[in-house]
Length: 291
Length: 143
Image (cartoon, rainbow over all chains, first blue to last red; front, side, top):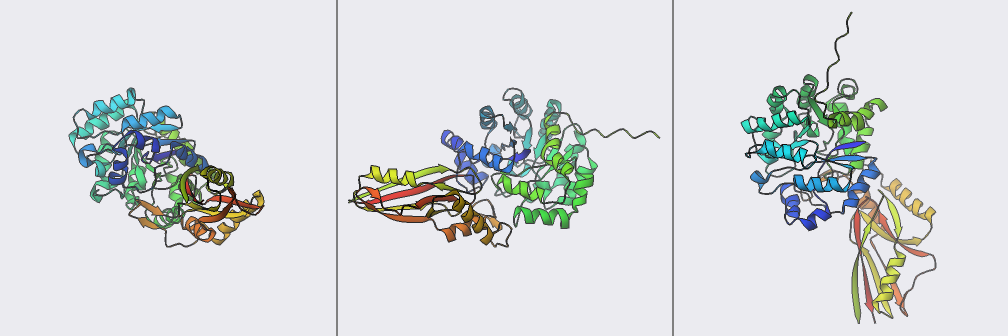
């Protein structure tokens, strides 16, 4: 099983090595838990049944003075274990961002792009942003993009709405976008995007009140019907926990508590993520049957 | 008068487990140089515990099972809300309540350099919300 959404922000080994790491985790990402040895990360994966995890940095140095872990730190963690799949983050407004992304993929060996317009403070129609999407498309990597409410301080909600991504999604049809957090609370907007566009996926890392199980029971049975996932979105959803804001095991239990078939769960936990990571571009629609 | 305090790190490996820390405590006492006095052991967390019981696997399992019966994971807890100081939601009220009921510390006399405990008394670090790196402190006081 693959966790498509984790942040390496509480790693003791990185906190000891990099002076700004702790300050960034506390002040920019705003998380108060204790720093843990890397071993805890693996054990958290183990108890949840997760074999591999995508590590997401956020390059928000221009906007917040500090980044939320760096591409180099993510690459360093990936060097320590093949269980990690590292993504890169670049600041679309910084000159040379597209080249920086290319280097992160080709030289650091990272596997995808992470963007957060709210925390990184960039408008989605910025021309330099389009250079980054173009580079990502050319590299054949997926892009995890923040949608939905952000807990990070000073992040405007208007930068988090799933529909703000429509222009890039339409302009770069070969670039797969994974909308983080299911776009909550704009779940229907995120779903509409995913239903309409073959290159829009959703990750399950949404938890904003109650327990993971309660939240999922509400969102995926009362807010939207679970049949929608089972029938229409089974190929478009990947499991994401948002660890360490949430323990991975709790999010796994929450997803498994939904009335979904084993086949559908297999796609959410494994198959869809593997397909996205295979650098295959957007899902191809099957050719219409000839009558 | 000797007063020594040691912080001990412990990597737990499961969501819930009982870990026998008696040998660690006895070793700290033995090295402290205290001949007669007290040893206090305290867990520094609120979602883990520390307790004393007979050191056998069936009891370890019973304690964890029945604590979970008392405080089920799926019960209705007020703690399930966003905690702004932590940047995350609190949904481990069951672990906190187990910690409250089971306790977080224990104290034993020291006589002639050894911990005085019943033959079946075993000191356990109780993980209720792991796996995590945890800390407990052992303070030895005496002469």
